[in-house]
Image 1 (cartoon, rainbow, N blue to C red):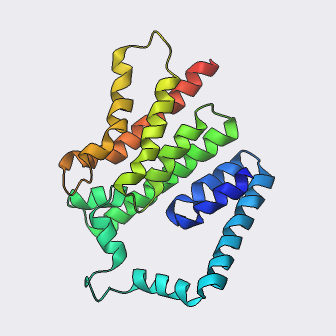
Image 2 (image 1 turned 90 degrees about the vertical axis):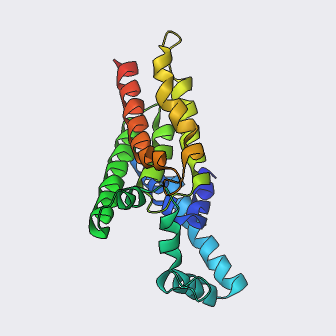
Length: 211
């Protein structure tokens, strides 16, 4: 059942790969198979209900400029999101460098998720929430609810004698939607750093708790 529910992420395809990877890393073969089957079933069902041309139209929207806006839908989305590539582009980097930064971020996210779920890190869910955002080439403001969830999980794992300073990073992560997107507010450019920083803190918490 858990795998089948994860398969529903096919409706948000940029976030689907890492949860699937997490199942593999955790050795959850049955859940992984159920996720694949669920995703495939939903794709097939949509083709039956609405016709396969719907899929072709969907690809066409992303591959060719729309006549109403005169801009590729993917390019328009990148203008207003919080992804690594968008933030690097807004800092003045050329397209190639921004793409390379996004690929590097995705590779780091994959490594974090694989290690967290392979080792049974108690904060693996929070790490996964951050990783899917860091790796995704498109992150909308409302998607940052995953970052808020990760921040709350991190705070919940703090020791009772933790200093107030330890709350600053999760607080910044929790309120990130307020200072995004970065095209509107320059402070939003730090969002990828918040994601990476919180992942590092979550990893460190796990190491300290097992020591």
